[in-house]
Each structure stands twice: as structure tokens, then as C-alpha cells.
Image (cartoon, rainbow, N blue to C red; front, side, top):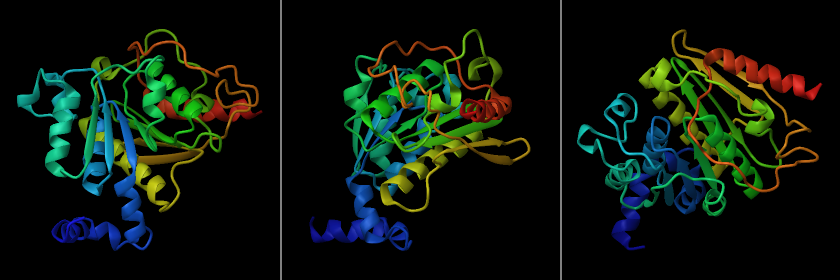
Length: 285
């Protein structure tokens, strides 16, 4: 590293380095880290901004969608001029403008059972910011099978929920949620979403990635964090590994990826938070 660039490096990340829990060693870990964000939308936008600002070495972005005008209320990576452009290309341009030292890898594709495994395995941490249950379960299963830690997140109306999974050590998303729900459930497009909560949850997910990378603090392992922005109430519920979990249990029957990531639904508000935590406790009985 050239002297000028070295001086700029320490100055850029000086506020991180001043933290005793991070320091020089932690910042160097961030600079060497590879983080994949699946979904360059409401959650992926703030997560990408903060990870880029922190100096993550390689930032992968996976999304097949184009920017739609209705996205701009909450998907802050994108601007009016980006409408009609590929989300990953719009996002990559913003990230490079924030921090040109970050290597951005854009995957303009839906990650399905045939493609997701090798991509996930190439990263140290994954942030899941998708808007439907089939994709959430597919990402969970891919990360668990590859042994890659990840942060799961979902938002609807005024409510957000998130958990962090360390495969082999903590409860996974399937442990908590069981099987993908059937039938029609509310979505952001049908029930609405308070735009600011995307920033709240995506920022938490970025923090979880950085905590895992640096070892600062304890990520949301075996915990389901839910919040209601109307009342500004936060609730953290303990969850446990389910010995009967199909992908990480004692006798898993999911040992390879199958299915697709067809769009269908998103988590159903604060009742879903309570229901998920309660269902997980029942599964342990």
C-alpha cells in the first residue's frame, strides 16, 4: 500500500479503529471480509451503505429486479434517475461512489437451488433481505449447508424482525419458522410498509455482519429481535435449535438444495414475531 493511500486508509476508518473492541486488527479483518447481500432493496440498501462505509473488502449484491418508482420510498440506494435500471447496477454505482476501495460483485440474477450454493460458499457472511418466504428458506438452507453465517430480516407495515444464524451452533430460520406458509399472506405491495423501518432493520443487519467479522459484541444468536415502530417497542425473544429441524436437526432430511425462489409472501407483522417465538418454544417440548 502506498504511503498516501495508507494515510488515507487510517484516516477514513479512524473512528472504527478508536473502538477498543475493533482497533487496527478488527479494521483489517473488515477490509479482508467478503459479505454477500441478497436483495438490493429496502433492507439491502442501508446494509450496503454501512458495510461499504466500514470498508468491507468485497461486497456481493444479488438481485434480478429493476428499480421501480414505488421502490424509492424506502430503497435508498436508488434514485429517480435509476428507475428502469437494474438494481444491482444502480447499487454498485452508489457503493463505489461512497468507497472506491470496496470491490463490488454484482449478480443480476435470481438465486435458485441450482445457483445459490457456490455463490454463498464464496462469502464469509450473508445478509438476507428478500421479500418472500420461499427465498428466505432457500437462503437459510444454502447458508446452513455451506456453513456460512447470515442475518435474516423481514419487514411489513410498521414491524421488523431479524435474527442471526451461525450454522451448527445456533437456531436457524427453519428452526424458528418451521415450514413455508401456504396460502396468501400480506405483502409490502398489498399491505404497505413504513419506509423508515427498512433503514432501521438494514442497519441492524449491517451491524450484525460487522460484529461477526470483528468479534465485537455478541450477534443475535438464538434470539429473534422484533420491533414495532408505531410504539417504538423492541422485543428480543430467545429461540433454540430444533432437534427435528429438517436442515440442521439431529436427523436432517434436507441435505441438498431443491425447489425455487418464486415470489409469494413476507412475514406477517408483530403477530408473526410472537407466533414464531412461541412455535419455536413448542418445538422444543
